Image (tube, rainbow, N blue to C red; front, top):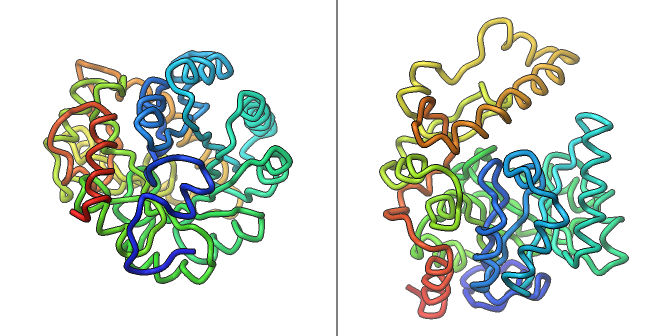
Length: 333
């Protein structure tokens, strides 16, 4: 499937998803709002609904949100299923969200943080397709063993939970799985997009680039911080979820630091303590990120972003971005 030196609008990814352009607006907590998802899909890419963002951050009913998106565009959308079974209640909610998505016509799913098998089993009878987030070959193998039909290759330039390898290293490591590969990380402008597609990727997933858009409802100060930042301004913090997360190195972050304290560090290394410590961090971060990402007063400059900030030079419409990337792929520049 993935093969070097080939860039085209039609790829195994577009065949799977039935979209025009091999471009994903990736799921982002807390920045995935329905208007942004709809705008990218309407323009020919595919927007991914993040159910925790929709229900917890934006306080919207999940089913109604899907219907609101369909009122804007009939083009395909996707859903992100965070499949780590951190609690029975959370897992039950995710199962319900997957069922609702299927009932509302969603057929493309991106799974993260676990074994995708239960999602694959749920969506396959309906013609659904599952791609799995991976950062290296061992996780890719588990995803493929679980039935994933494509891989989201998360490299070291990604926002959120970034990988440790370059897009080139990850492509070489994963191409032997012979499934569609999606480049996630470091794609902020058309040149980087075409470069990744020419390398052999079947699509690219963008997150940070789509935060700095008119349709994204995060704060203007957050968007402007992305525009002003360069790749060197992105650092990894272990104080958000206990696992390194890419964020902008603001004054607030410099003051707070990026490493856990002594007790937290010990618990994160403990066979049993790490689960509870990560859960504590994740719950705390969920509230902090929700508040800071929408606070126009920027009382706490706590903003996620990847190194693709280097290619983001202005706030613009999501549709214009997709159109520009499409033209770049067609012309090769």
